[in-house]
Length: 113
Length: 114
Image (cartoon, rainbow over all chains, first blue to last red; front, side):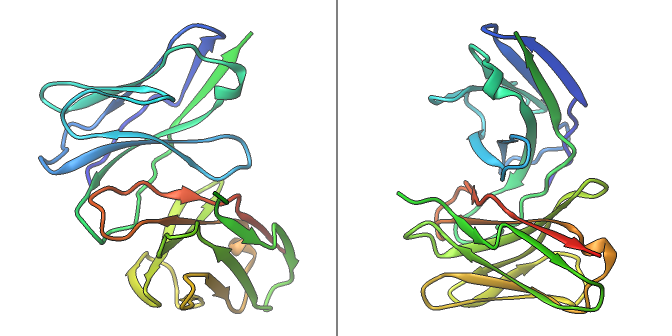
């Protein structure tokens, strides 16, 4: 799996959009970008994933650059409950195998009132 | 739908003892993965089980082992505990056979080795 680089920490005001960047310059053509988050003392929570196109779900949006070397996770209206460590993972995905996600150090997002 | 459950939630052991942790996946999920999380090393993959067989293994010593039962429930065992085994142990379940790796994590078992 390709290495990812994320800022160590970020702050965001409550109600504003949180934009979390991730660099994955060595990503291969069939590696997906996954985002997970971990709220303090809980298990990680899946947020979203994508390959080439931008993706949106009820939690967040994922913007992937055209060259796929970087991506941005967007939380449109951050709340205090979004304070967590956010992990960006580039993972080779194909059916039925490879359950080993490789987590880096992630970005500690602090949402402030 | 019930989430991934892990028991016990907290455990205190002494060096040299062994410990068994349990994980029940989400109904219908047949793959269970185990991870260790420590402040120094972060989240590290231990192993993955599917259909009662270990399919994938991380870089951990043989003291760490696991198994999976026919109902997909899984256990992991750590023998001859060391102080460095103190960690949060997480299990995650997922569908097997889809092209995506959306894993659902349990709350973890906090193991303290004294």
